[in-house]
Image (cartoon, rainbow, N blue to C red):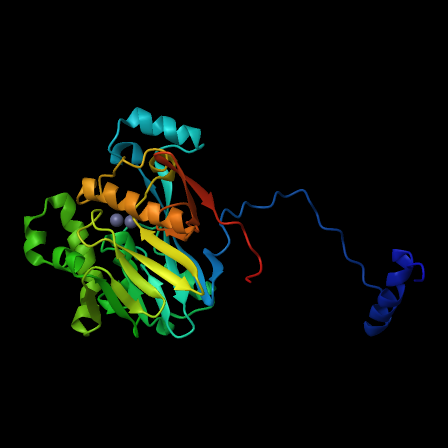
Length: 330
Ligand SMILES: [Zn+2]
Ligand SMILES: [Zn+2]
Protein backbone atom coordinates (compact mmCIF):
# COMPACT_ATOMS: atom_id res chain seq x y z
CA UNK A 1 0.00 0.00 0.00
CA UNK A 2 1.44 3.42 -0.93
CA UNK A 3 2.12 5.92 1.78
CA UNK A 4 -0.87 8.31 2.24
CA UNK A 5 -0.32 11.89 1.10
CA UNK A 6 0.02 14.55 3.77
CA UNK A 7 -3.42 16.13 4.28
CA UNK A 8 -2.57 19.54 2.82
CA UNK A 9 -1.25 17.90 -0.30
CA UNK A 10 -4.20 15.55 -0.57
CA UNK A 11 -6.72 18.42 -0.51
CA UNK A 12 -4.78 20.70 -2.86
CA UNK A 13 -6.45 19.44 -6.06
CA UNK A 14 -9.91 20.04 -4.50
CA UNK A 15 -9.01 23.60 -3.49
CA UNK A 16 -7.62 24.21 -6.91
CA UNK A 17 -10.69 22.93 -8.72
CA UNK A 18 -12.97 25.00 -6.45
CA UNK A 19 -10.95 28.12 -7.24
CA UNK A 20 -11.29 27.34 -10.93
CA UNK A 21 -15.02 26.74 -10.59
CA UNK A 22 -15.42 30.19 -9.05
CA UNK A 23 -13.59 31.81 -11.98
CA UNK A 24 -10.24 31.84 -10.30
CA UNK A 25 -11.45 34.15 -7.51
CA UNK A 26 -9.96 33.13 -4.21
CA UNK A 27 -12.67 32.70 -1.57
CA UNK A 28 -11.78 33.58 1.96
CA UNK A 29 -14.03 32.44 4.78
CA UNK A 30 -13.72 34.12 8.15
CA UNK A 31 -13.25 31.64 10.99
CA UNK A 32 -16.39 31.15 13.12
CA UNK A 33 -16.54 33.51 16.07
CA UNK A 34 -16.84 31.51 19.27
CA UNK A 35 -17.52 34.38 21.65
CA UNK A 36 -21.36 33.95 21.70
CA UNK A 37 -22.51 30.93 23.73
CA UNK A 38 -24.63 28.40 21.84
CA UNK A 39 -28.19 28.31 23.22
CA UNK A 40 -29.21 25.16 25.12
CA UNK A 41 -31.44 22.90 23.02
CA UNK A 42 -33.20 21.06 25.86
CA UNK A 43 -35.12 18.43 23.88
CA UNK A 44 -34.58 14.70 23.39
CA UNK A 45 -34.51 12.69 20.20
CA UNK A 46 -37.96 11.73 18.86
CA UNK A 47 -39.51 9.30 21.34
CA UNK A 48 -39.57 5.95 19.61
CA UNK A 49 -37.53 2.82 20.17
CA UNK A 50 -37.67 -0.35 18.12
CA UNK A 51 -37.00 -4.00 18.79
CA UNK A 52 -37.74 -7.13 16.80
CA UNK A 53 -39.75 -9.92 18.40
CA UNK A 54 -39.46 -12.92 16.09
CA UNK A 55 -40.98 -11.68 12.83
CA UNK A 56 -42.86 -8.83 14.54
CA UNK A 57 -41.55 -5.28 14.72
CA UNK A 58 -42.26 -3.63 18.06
CA UNK A 59 -41.99 0.16 18.33
CA UNK A 60 -42.23 1.75 21.76
CA UNK A 61 -43.79 5.21 21.39
CA UNK A 62 -43.38 7.92 23.99
CA UNK A 63 -46.39 10.09 24.77
CA UNK A 64 -44.14 12.30 26.91
CA UNK A 65 -43.73 12.43 30.68
CA UNK A 66 -45.76 13.82 33.54
CA UNK A 67 -44.70 14.76 37.07
CA UNK A 68 -46.49 12.58 39.62
CA UNK A 69 -46.49 13.22 43.34
CA UNK A 70 -45.77 9.56 44.01
CA UNK A 71 -44.92 10.17 47.68
CA UNK A 72 -48.61 11.07 48.11
CA UNK A 73 -50.02 8.58 45.60
CA UNK A 74 -48.36 5.36 46.77
CA UNK A 75 -50.00 3.51 49.65
CA UNK A 76 -47.07 3.65 52.04
CA UNK A 77 -45.59 6.33 54.32
CA UNK A 78 -44.19 9.21 52.20
CA UNK A 79 -40.85 9.01 54.05
CA UNK A 80 -40.39 5.39 52.93
CA UNK A 81 -41.23 6.30 49.34
CA UNK A 82 -38.82 9.23 49.46
CA UNK A 83 -36.04 6.98 50.79
CA UNK A 84 -36.61 4.39 48.03
CA UNK A 85 -36.65 7.13 45.39
CA UNK A 86 -33.42 8.62 46.75
CA UNK A 87 -31.76 5.21 46.42
CA UNK A 88 -32.64 5.34 42.71
CA UNK A 89 -31.41 8.96 42.39
CA UNK A 90 -34.89 10.38 41.78
CA UNK A 91 -37.41 12.26 43.92
CA UNK A 92 -41.11 13.02 44.20
CA UNK A 93 -42.72 14.53 42.16
CA UNK A 94 -41.35 11.90 39.83
CA UNK A 95 -41.10 12.60 36.11
CA UNK A 96 -43.07 9.58 34.90
CA UNK A 97 -43.08 8.21 31.36
CA UNK A 98 -46.23 7.41 29.43
CA UNK A 99 -45.43 4.71 26.86
CA UNK A 100 -47.47 2.94 24.19
CA UNK A 101 -46.46 0.06 21.93
CA UNK A 102 -46.98 -0.32 18.19
CA UNK A 103 -46.81 -3.89 16.91
CA UNK A 104 -46.40 -4.61 13.21
CA UNK A 105 -47.20 -8.31 12.81
CA UNK A 106 -46.70 -8.14 9.04
CA UNK A 107 -50.46 -8.64 8.58
CA UNK A 108 -51.80 -6.10 11.11
CA UNK A 109 -50.61 -2.85 12.62
CA UNK A 110 -51.73 -2.84 16.25
CA UNK A 111 -51.33 -0.02 18.75
CA UNK A 112 -51.47 -0.91 22.44
CA UNK A 113 -52.73 2.21 24.28
CA UNK A 114 -52.96 5.65 22.74
CA UNK A 115 -51.43 8.15 25.18
CA UNK A 116 -53.17 11.08 26.86
CA UNK A 117 -53.95 13.41 23.96
CA UNK A 118 -54.92 16.71 25.56
CA UNK A 119 -56.38 15.18 28.74
CA UNK A 120 -53.34 15.27 30.99
CA UNK A 121 -51.61 18.58 30.36
CA UNK A 122 -49.03 19.93 27.95
CA UNK A 123 -46.16 17.52 28.72
CA UNK A 124 -48.12 14.57 27.28
CA UNK A 125 -49.90 14.04 23.96
CA UNK A 126 -46.81 13.45 21.86
CA UNK A 127 -47.69 9.95 20.70
CA UNK A 128 -48.96 11.04 17.29
CA UNK A 129 -45.83 13.05 16.48
CA UNK A 130 -43.66 10.14 17.60
CA UNK A 131 -45.70 7.62 15.60
CA UNK A 132 -45.06 9.71 12.47
CA UNK A 133 -41.41 10.16 13.40
CA UNK A 134 -41.20 6.36 13.66
CA UNK A 135 -42.29 6.07 10.01
CA UNK A 136 -45.99 5.25 10.40
CA UNK A 137 -49.24 7.13 9.74
CA UNK A 138 -52.36 6.99 11.95
CA UNK A 139 -54.42 5.80 8.96
CA UNK A 140 -52.32 2.61 8.85
CA UNK A 141 -53.33 1.45 12.34
CA UNK A 142 -55.81 -1.45 12.06
CA UNK A 143 -56.55 -2.14 15.72
CA UNK A 144 -56.02 -0.44 19.06
CA UNK A 145 -55.92 -2.62 22.17
CA UNK A 146 -56.46 -0.75 25.42
CA UNK A 147 -54.93 -1.97 28.66
CA UNK A 148 -57.62 0.12 30.39
CA UNK A 149 -59.57 3.34 29.99
CA UNK A 150 -57.66 5.80 32.20
CA UNK A 151 -57.11 9.16 30.45
CA UNK A 152 -53.35 8.68 29.93
CA UNK A 153 -54.12 5.56 27.85
CA UNK A 154 -57.18 6.68 25.85
CA UNK A 155 -56.87 10.47 25.45
CA UNK A 156 -54.97 10.17 22.16
CA UNK A 157 -57.76 8.15 20.52
CA UNK A 158 -59.89 11.15 19.51
CA UNK A 159 -59.50 14.83 18.94
CA UNK A 160 -62.57 17.07 19.39
CA UNK A 161 -64.89 14.10 19.04
CA UNK A 162 -63.24 12.79 15.86
CA UNK A 163 -61.29 9.50 15.79
CA UNK A 164 -57.57 10.22 15.39
CA UNK A 165 -57.10 6.71 13.94
CA UNK A 166 -59.77 6.71 11.22
CA UNK A 167 -59.35 3.08 10.14
CA UNK A 168 -58.84 1.49 13.55
CA UNK A 169 -61.15 -0.66 15.65
CA UNK A 170 -60.80 -0.27 19.43
CA UNK A 171 -60.75 -3.28 21.75
CA UNK A 172 -60.91 -3.35 25.55
CA UNK A 173 -62.28 -5.64 28.22
CA UNK A 174 -66.04 -5.13 28.55
CA UNK A 175 -65.61 -4.59 32.32
CA UNK A 176 -63.73 -1.38 31.59
CA UNK A 177 -66.20 -0.01 29.05
CA UNK A 178 -69.18 -1.04 31.22
CA UNK A 179 -67.58 0.93 34.08
CA UNK A 180 -66.00 3.99 32.43
CA UNK A 181 -68.58 4.63 29.69
CA UNK A 182 -71.51 4.49 32.10
CA UNK A 183 -73.35 7.76 32.60
CA UNK A 184 -74.79 6.35 35.85
CA UNK A 185 -71.30 5.71 37.23
CA UNK A 186 -70.17 9.17 36.26
CA UNK A 187 -73.14 10.78 37.96
CA UNK A 188 -72.30 8.85 41.16
CA UNK A 189 -68.56 9.68 41.02
CA UNK A 190 -66.88 12.23 43.28
CA UNK A 191 -66.05 15.58 41.60
CA UNK A 192 -62.37 14.52 41.47
CA UNK A 193 -63.17 11.25 39.71
CA UNK A 194 -65.67 12.65 37.18
CA UNK A 195 -62.87 13.72 34.84
CA UNK A 196 -61.78 10.08 34.42
CA UNK A 197 -65.25 9.13 33.14
CA UNK A 198 -65.50 12.21 30.91
CA UNK A 199 -62.07 11.48 29.44
CA UNK A 200 -62.95 7.86 28.65
CA UNK A 201 -66.28 8.85 27.09
CA UNK A 202 -64.84 11.67 24.96
CA UNK A 203 -62.08 9.36 23.69
CA UNK A 204 -63.86 6.04 23.12
CA UNK A 205 -67.45 7.06 22.27
CA UNK A 206 -66.60 8.40 18.77
CA UNK A 207 -65.50 4.83 17.91
CA UNK A 208 -68.59 3.34 19.59
CA UNK A 209 -70.77 5.64 17.47
CA UNK A 210 -68.94 4.56 14.30
CA UNK A 211 -69.40 0.85 15.15
CA UNK A 212 -65.66 0.55 15.74
CA UNK A 213 -65.55 -0.53 19.35
CA UNK A 214 -65.34 -4.27 20.01
CA UNK A 215 -65.19 -5.23 23.68
CA UNK A 216 -63.83 -8.63 24.74
CA UNK A 217 -64.45 -10.71 27.84
CA UNK A 218 -61.34 -11.92 29.68
CA UNK A 219 -58.70 -14.08 28.00
CA UNK A 220 -58.62 -14.75 24.28
CA UNK A 221 -56.75 -14.17 21.01
CA UNK A 222 -57.51 -10.89 19.23
CA UNK A 223 -55.28 -11.19 16.17
CA UNK A 224 -52.81 -13.97 15.32
CA UNK A 225 -49.85 -13.50 17.68
CA UNK A 226 -51.55 -11.25 20.24
CA UNK A 227 -53.72 -12.49 23.10
CA UNK A 228 -55.26 -10.88 26.15
CA UNK A 229 -54.21 -11.73 29.69
CA UNK A 230 -56.76 -10.53 32.26
CA UNK A 231 -55.01 -8.56 35.01
CA UNK A 232 -58.01 -6.86 36.59
CA UNK A 233 -57.66 -4.66 39.66
CA UNK A 234 -56.01 -1.41 38.62
CA UNK A 235 -59.32 -0.92 36.81
CA UNK A 236 -62.22 -3.41 36.60
CA UNK A 237 -61.08 -4.67 33.17
CA UNK A 238 -57.35 -3.91 33.19
CA UNK A 239 -55.72 -6.22 30.64
CA UNK A 240 -52.15 -7.19 29.73
CA UNK A 241 -51.30 -8.36 26.21
CA UNK A 242 -49.07 -11.26 25.28
CA UNK A 243 -47.40 -10.74 21.90
CA UNK A 244 -45.66 -13.78 20.45
CA UNK A 245 -43.73 -14.53 17.28
CA UNK A 246 -41.40 -17.46 16.59
CA UNK A 247 -41.31 -18.39 20.27
CA UNK A 248 -40.30 -14.90 21.42
CA UNK A 249 -42.69 -13.21 23.82
CA UNK A 250 -43.50 -9.68 24.90
CA UNK A 251 -45.98 -9.01 27.70
CA UNK A 252 -47.37 -5.48 27.68
CA UNK A 253 -48.36 -5.01 31.32
CA UNK A 254 -50.04 -1.58 31.19
CA UNK A 255 -50.36 -0.12 34.69
CA UNK A 256 -49.28 -3.15 36.74
CA UNK A 257 -46.36 -1.01 37.89
CA UNK A 258 -46.06 2.79 38.17
CA UNK A 259 -42.96 3.47 40.25
CA UNK A 260 -40.15 1.02 39.57
CA UNK A 261 -37.93 2.50 42.29
CA UNK A 262 -40.49 1.45 44.90
CA UNK A 263 -42.67 -1.34 43.54
CA UNK A 264 -39.97 -3.76 42.35
CA UNK A 265 -38.51 -3.95 45.86
CA UNK A 266 -41.95 -3.84 47.49
CA UNK A 267 -44.49 -5.25 45.03
CA UNK A 268 -47.27 -5.11 47.62
CA UNK A 269 -47.26 -1.28 47.51
CA UNK A 270 -50.30 -0.07 45.57
CA UNK A 271 -51.17 3.33 44.09
CA UNK A 272 -54.11 5.69 44.56
CA UNK A 273 -55.31 5.14 40.97
CA UNK A 274 -56.06 1.44 41.64
CA UNK A 275 -59.80 0.67 41.59
CA UNK A 276 -59.22 -2.45 43.68
CA UNK A 277 -55.74 -2.21 45.23
CA UNK A 278 -55.73 -5.79 46.57
CA UNK A 279 -56.60 -7.28 43.19
CA UNK A 280 -54.11 -4.94 41.49
CA UNK A 281 -51.29 -6.26 43.72
CA UNK A 282 -52.30 -9.88 43.03
CA UNK A 283 -52.39 -9.21 39.26
CA UNK A 284 -48.92 -7.63 39.41
CA UNK A 285 -47.53 -10.68 41.20
CA UNK A 286 -49.22 -13.16 38.83
CA UNK A 287 -48.15 -11.49 35.59
CA UNK A 288 -44.62 -10.70 36.82
CA UNK A 289 -44.18 -14.37 37.83
CA UNK A 290 -45.27 -15.50 34.39
CA UNK A 291 -42.98 -13.00 32.65
CA UNK A 292 -39.98 -13.96 34.81
CA UNK A 293 -40.58 -17.70 34.40
CA UNK A 294 -40.79 -17.40 30.62
CA UNK A 295 -37.99 -14.85 30.30
CA UNK A 296 -40.48 -12.72 28.36
CA UNK A 297 -39.74 -9.16 27.37
CA UNK A 298 -41.95 -6.78 29.36
CA UNK A 299 -43.39 -3.46 28.15
CA UNK A 300 -44.64 -1.15 30.92
CA UNK A 301 -46.64 2.02 30.35
CA UNK A 302 -45.02 4.04 33.14
CA UNK A 303 -41.48 2.75 33.55
CA UNK A 304 -38.87 5.08 32.09
CA UNK A 305 -39.09 5.16 28.29
CA UNK A 306 -39.01 2.83 26.38
CA UNK A 307 -40.29 0.82 29.36
CA UNK A 308 -38.87 -2.40 27.88
CA UNK A 309 -36.91 -4.93 29.89
CA UNK A 310 -36.91 -8.28 31.65
CA UNK A 311 -37.91 -9.26 35.16
CA UNK A 312 -35.84 -11.42 37.46
CA UNK A 313 -37.26 -12.85 40.68
CA UNK A 314 -35.26 -11.85 43.77
CA UNK A 315 -36.98 -13.47 46.74
CA UNK A 316 -40.20 -11.54 47.31
CA UNK A 317 -38.86 -8.64 45.23
CA UNK A 318 -38.17 -8.14 41.52
CA UNK A 319 -35.19 -6.96 39.59
CA UNK A 320 -35.80 -4.94 36.44
CA UNK A 321 -33.25 -5.41 33.68
CA UNK A 322 -33.73 -2.80 30.94
CA UNK A 323 -33.21 -3.93 27.33
CA UNK A 324 -29.77 -3.51 25.90
CA UNK A 325 -29.58 -0.61 23.42
CA UNK A 326 -29.52 -1.83 19.86
CA UNK A 327 -28.79 0.22 16.74
CA UNK A 328 -29.59 -2.45 14.18
CA UNK A 329 -32.51 -4.82 14.45
CA UNK A 330 -31.85 -8.48 13.93
ZN1 LIG B 1 -54.14 3.61 34.94
ZN1 LIG C 1 -51.52 4.88 33.32
